[in-house]
Length: 256
Image (cartoon, rainbow, N blue to C red; front, side, top):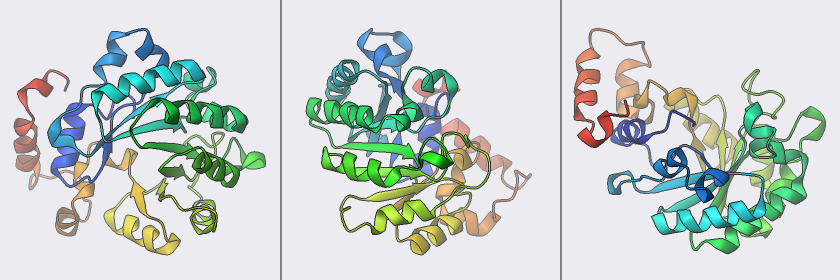
């Protein structure tokens, strides 16, 4: 998540039980041009592992070159973002913009897979809009070119973050006999209880949680959830928040 999943944020999420985390997504064009902001996002730390570095872009050569740069950083996973709906990303033919051109999506993915020794995963959406829900084709074709897992956000690009996420197409991908890679669901998971309910209901391999963790890393901690029932901050847990902030490594505090 741009300007969210930086090292201090990842530190607190890991502290409260996140199993796997990703960096902010990084522009492939920025990486190959050695942009300071893009290079800074490659910073990962041993205590964060397992961790994935996420890239985005719409040019095969740039994606392949950036994959080699990421490879040298030695994360556990290289993830491709084909799901970001933001206009400034989409208008460059990146993020969710490639949902209108599955052939391009496949070429970009293949270029990355061939350029790294890391397992490559993808995050995407159901499709461009309601008239173009093509996630089944996307899933099969990306698996065919070598991705090791797929995360699906249950909205189209046209929906942005409005309305409710539709998990039925995600379940359909998981239940497709052609699919053998892990399938993760994403969208509207706001509590640990809902994560477990949806995982079991739709038969998925796991959940990805994004916006619900902003300002509330305790979402990854089942015990904390049982104690607080996701209540807003009160005087009872302000001291816990203070202690948590003070525990963040000094090298990260300048980013807060």
